[in-house]
Image (cartoon, rainbow, N blue to C red):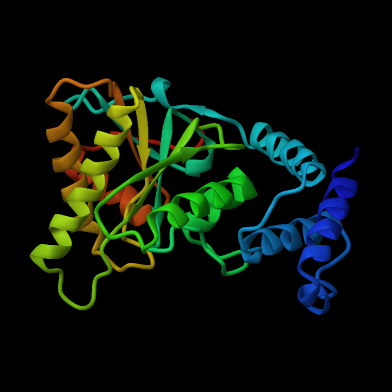
Amino acid sequence: MKRIEQLRQINAMLLDELPGYRPQARSFSADAAGQRRLLRSLMNIRPPMPLREEYLAVQDALLSAEREEKGVVDGMGLPTVPAHPQIAVWQGDITRLGVDAVVNAANSALLGCFHPCHGCIDNAIHSAAGLQLRDECNRLMQAQGSPEPAGRAKLTKGYNLPARYVLHTVGPIVHGRVTSKDCKELASCYRACLELAAEHSLESVAFCCISTGEFHFPHQEAAEIAIKTVAGFLRQDSSIKRVILNVFKDIDAEIYRQLLGPGRTAEAGA
């Protein structure tokens, strides 16, 4: 099936479930780019509900093909920092990393981002993984019965990501000056993810820059906490052999270069 046919088919199935979105859907162009943007929008706004096998078959075929087209980056093959031989820094799209687990900076609902095509990491990871990820997160949250507090972690499958699993953590939201509580919660996010990964005998984990986007944690302080917490955890015995500190923005790449030394950040094309 051609890409445009896949897009039209699964968009039609989603619009059957979300008929109130049909007027907005008409504003998207009929070409592949427009239909792909419509698909991401529909995936973003769709609430957790039963998933039809016919939808999943087409969705998974599309997302797996896109995964291969983007190219999978072998996390274990990335160069490490000389002072920290188990830590690598890589700038690029975290949904390309082939690791045991990628870390998602989630919100307290833990269901992904519901804003169509939003640029946050939560949206990117859920959109690349597929709707199964929101469904599994919903089951976890229904069982928990309350919002996810900051500083903890939950593990789900990775579905159509090259990563086997996703570690979901809620970082602190900074209002004004950073408090000691904010710093402790951010450190707890990194520690909780690594502890949960080790409990499941995972060997490689890729972290995004937790809380530095929509949650407004200052980039410099967040990077310092990330390095200190990860390096401290790696000094103990565990299954973790490689931690990738993933950056997307140039500001974060520069901060990590300053903290870890020049030339220590692998580029997105690696």
